[in-house]
Each structure stands twice: as C-alpha cells, then as structure tokens.
Image (cartoon, rainbow, N blue to C red):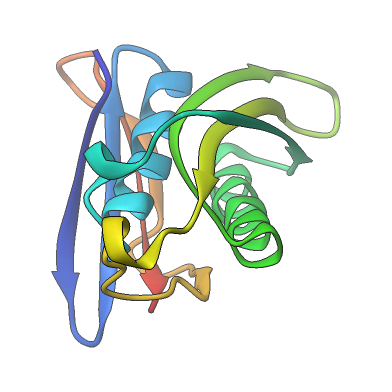
Length: 142
C-alpha cells in the first residue's frame, strides 16, 4: 500500500513516500508533492502523461523523477493524482518509466496553496527500512 506525507522544513516542504516496493515509495513521494500544492483528492486522474528518466542511483532517480513531474506540472499547467511506474536496473543505473494521470489546474476547485519549483538534495533519502518498507523522501522548493 502506497503511503505518503508532507513534513515541515523551514520555508520549504518535505515529501515522503513509503511502500512495500521502491515503485510504491516513488509513487507516494509524487503524491506527497501534489499534496504540497493542493488536496490530492480534488485532482481527477483524467489525462495520462508519460515520464521517463534515468540516474546513477535510486536517490538521484527520485530527484529526477520529481523534477520531471515539476516540469510537466509547469509546462502543461496540470496536477497529478495517480502514478504507474516501472523502475528497471541497468548498467548505468536505474531507469524509470511512468504514466502520471491528472488534469489541468482549476484554481477554484484545486485551491493551489503553493507552486513547486523543484526537488532538492535536502533530506534526500531512498532506502529500505528495517521493517521491509521502502522510503523515498526529499525537500521540494515552494
């Protein structure tokens, strides 16, 4: 089961995803990033957007993933509420392919509280916890 939460961090917002798999944790972190903007329950998963990225390790992949979503949010003026991901290992590091489902921003319905500018190295962590659950977190600039 995908878990997500935001956490306070000075002037910015921390995003954290958890799950039984790395994929679930990455999806949770993305949902937490939506929660930094608005209530994810107000976002309809109507339109699919394909996202892909690769990085040398899982932590940098999380940053690339979240920053790719920030780019799509800004250029398409969309918010996302559902994420289908696949992360595959490769010689140069993991590759991520995803479909983010969302809709255009509706200021009245979504009541956006902030604009995410990007994911940062601050509080960056991707790891499997002692209980077997995966954690994926960082701070996003708002």
